[in-house]
Amino acid sequence: MPTIQQLKEQAQHMKETLQEQAPNQRQLIGAVTIVTVIVLLTTIGGLVTGGLAIGAAVLTPVFIFFSPVLVPLGTVFFVGVAGLLSAAGVTLVGVSTLRWLYHYFMGYHPVGSDKVDAAKNRIVDTASHLKERASDYVHDAQENFEHVKDQTLATATYLKRANQIGRRYSETENATVQRYIVRVLRVEKLKYR
Image (tube, rainbow, N blue to C red; front, top):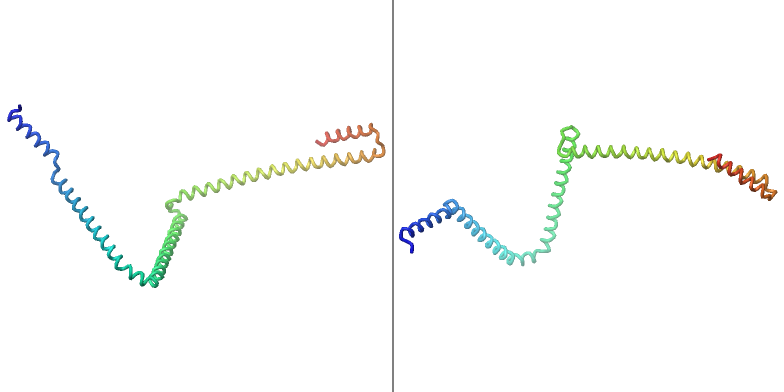
């Protein structure tokens, strides 16, 4: 069984522990303030909700009675306000754009000018690359045209020669003559390649 002295020491120890863990005065005031604000805001929210419900119940018949006037009036008001806000927005965007362009062309380097410069350089690089490719295509097409032209001339000469040889020996059906024509045409064909 513990002695009285030990019990006093344990009680003192427990008292010190409670005092260390207990909130100080500043924390206590903060907690009371937070609870008070929460209760106050909840009360105000409930009163506003109740007021809105009562107001809606009272004003619903008035709105229904005056709806032939209020709905067109509300529509006109909404369209008018929307138009004014749209016009103001478009004007603001236009003025901002003109201001940005002025600063850009005057050399003040506004925000985003580095991206515009990068895009401009990309467009110039792409255009020069496309110009080079188009030039290569034109050059290749000209070379192919010259090659086709040479082949066409060679074929035309070959056919003309075959026609001349064929007319000379058209009266005879001699196999020797036919072999001679084929041999001459082969030689002619080799010449024009």
